Image (cartoon, rainbow, N blue to C red; front, side, top):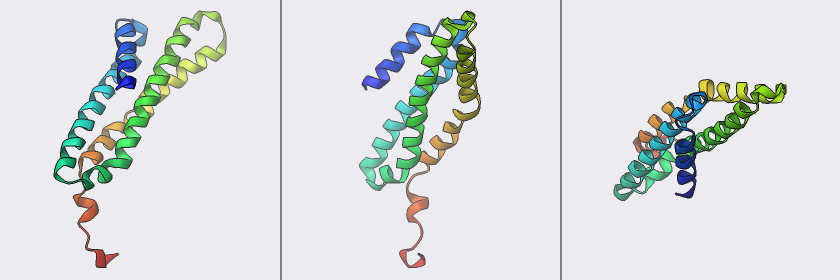
Length: 130
């Protein structure tokens, strides 16, 4: 919950900054999706505790992306503040953050779908078939 509040505060603080929109909007969206996914998986677990295990790898990867998105957004904020310094370090940081948000963060859409697929595909095979 604390980390979620930290992200929400960051989004609130920088949400109106035009230069941060490429970072803030996807970060806020993923934060909302993780909250929803967490609730869904928790509810499924009431019916079948194996549901949590079936979703664990995908869920943890989504959470990892949330952490990286937050850190890259913070990095972008600093790089934007220092972009006029002439230091290529900050330009590189900004390009790296844009790469992450454009090319890697979209993986979460597929991970969320597979986390929601449930335990049935994992448990459907008869034990004797292994």
